[in-house]
Amino acid sequence: MLIGRPLRQPAPAAAGPPDTGGGWQTGQMTLTDPPASAATAGPVAGEPCVLLKQGELFLKGRNRPQFERMLQANLRAAVRDSGVPVELLAREGVLVMRVPADRLTPAGHAAAVARLAARAADVPGLARVCLALRVARTEQAAAAAAVALTSAGSGSFAVRARRRDKRFPLSSEQLSALIGAQVKAAHGLPVSLSRPDTEIFVEVDTDEIFVFTGGQPGQGGLPVGMSGRAVVLLSGGIDSPVAAYRMMRRGLRCVFVHFSGMPLTGPESVYKAYALVRGLDRFQGGSRLYVVPFGRAQQSLASSGAGRLQVVAQRRLMLKTAEALAARQHATALVTGDSLGQVSSQTLPNIAALDDAVGLPILRPLLGWDKAEIMAEARRLGTLAVSELPDQDCCTLLMPRRAEIRAKVEDLRKIEGRLDADELAGQLAGSAQLYRPE
Image 1 (cartoon, rainbow, N blue to C red):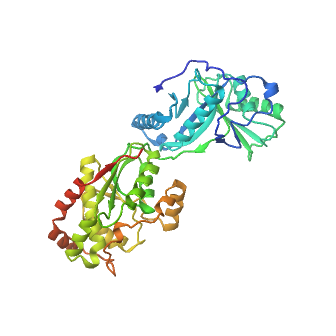
Image 2 (cartoon, rainbow, N blue to C red):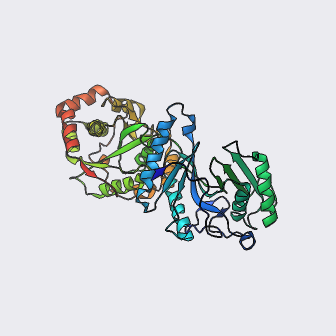
Image 3 (cartoon, rainbow, N blue to C red):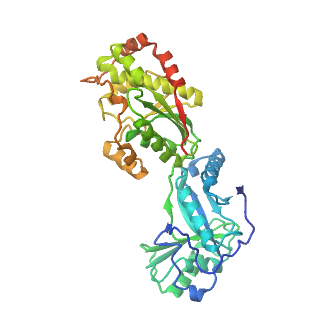
């Protein structure tokens, strides 16, 4: 993949609008919709491409280029396995993905571009992903593309022109008026500047013009990897996958650790954890899942007299084990799906007792979320169905009849002293089995 500027004039596409194959939505229409004026307008000099809008990166100062380089690297990695040759063009505040059309039919070319758009929509750091037509830097080419992207059924419309290159001879208002007049003449559509059914966006750059009718929201946030690396304690439930996603959006690359009840339970929870990591991998790529057999350690805690402190004590041991793994993965934080007051182990005194167990910061992005909010986000991410599959969670093993809701650090340290918890955590980290979701 290359980064650079194209030749002054983009290669003309075949007559008619491109066929995306998947009908990826752009505003009120798709690029698969044939323009009503195709019979009269003639060939449209437009190349389908993906226009990527950066969001929060605009707020960065002198280190903004570092964020942009990380975002570009993540995009290249995300589309590497697509089988599509991709050229990534850097512009002021936007990125452009284009596919050289030398060996592709017009329909195959547009379908490949649509696949890239769908993949780019999963990459954190982008505010919006738009399927666009890339045309020559003339008002005639921009107007022809706008006519091709609309039809008699598009309803009322408005043209939103913007010049990133102020050297273009027409002002934004003049360009909007010129294109709007041609769209109205071609389709007979009414103009509505306040509440249009279709918005036609025209963006003038230094070497070309981009024309599009909408797009879809990106993931937003920061590029994965920009904020460092963290170890996520993945239980297999609903909360922890959502917490991992929220941290990815803040630029953290997540390494996952799952504590299985084996050999006291079956492997069902491991299958769930693997499926969850595989689903989340589309946001960062190259994910790693470590599975720790935790059943014997739970038995040791119970035999040491943990009693009502069993749940908090085993969670402290999990955190110590995750911290040992973090040292090997060069991670500088731990992530959990804790939500304040949701269960007995997540009361404020118990959370304070958990923080005491390790030296690394414990990030809890869902601390102020309620269960309905977490489930809605899990449903949107596609992890809810997997999380709701039945399995025997290791956290439910050896549960006391009444769990402690105001754990004291001194009592927990006494229990850990009987087991030499730090050494046990190192042994558990050493027994972890690595999985790399494909």
